[in-house]
Amino acid sequence: MSASQTRSSASEILEQLDRIIEIMRCLRDPETGCPWDVEQDFATIAPYTIEEAYEVADAIQRGDVDDIRDELGDLLLQVVFHARIAEEAGLFTLADVARGISDKMIDRHPHVFGDETRPEAAQQSRRWEDIKAAERERRGQTGVLDDVAAGLPPMLRALKLQKRAARVGFDWPDIDRVIDKLHEETAELRDELARKSVDMAKVEDEVGDVLFVAVNLARQAGVDPETALMTCNAKFEKRFRYIEQQVENNGKNIKETSLEEMEMHWQAAKSAL
Image (cartoon, rainbow, N blue to C red; front, side, top):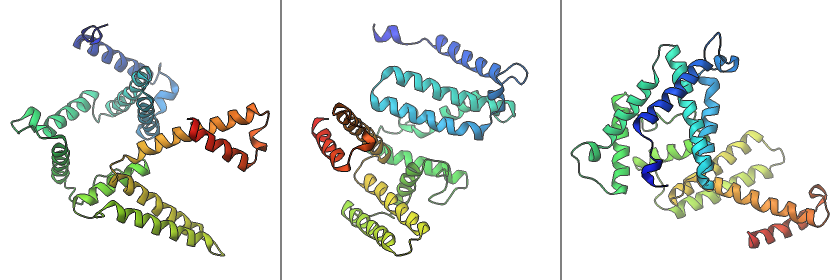
């Protein structure tokens, strides 16, 4: 099948968007709709929106095109759901959402929709941040850390806070200094855990410092920390399932297997997988 054969026409796109909008209208109908859907509001739906975004990222990481399509559909549903809630309250409509992001994209790409010279990718990234900073100033958000959403996943928020601070020069000069800081923070955590009377609030604080520096380390290394952790999680899962399989092959129960034996299988998994 050629690319032209798979490309949807504008009329088909609009038809399917109208369809999902109408489905959501029916689901939210107070008298004939779904009781669960009718009860929802921005706050109750927000966790599902976050979950669906992560499921899109997971499908992309796995390279499963069918899942990417399905998960993008789930994420689109979240947008339609929020917009419907807003429309019912007289706040805004899905058309307002689409218009707003379209206007924003045009404003943020003057080299495409205006007369500015087309920059290199790195220059465009800096230009993008400058434009976003100007938008914040127009909204009266003049603080460096203004508009970093408190509801972001903690690791992503840490990364955004660090990037904002770095834009005004509050940053480590090189990655070696970050590694030194990581050693310093882990030493402080070790000291807290070694106390006769462990203060768990202080332990939590030190663990937070370690995680914050780890995010900084990823940023300095040019690595997205969430992607790195997702990859590490997948690697751990694959290796641990290998351990389970080997233990089962030996006629044993994983719960009754010694740490030494599991470590032996772990090392084998590192070589095999």
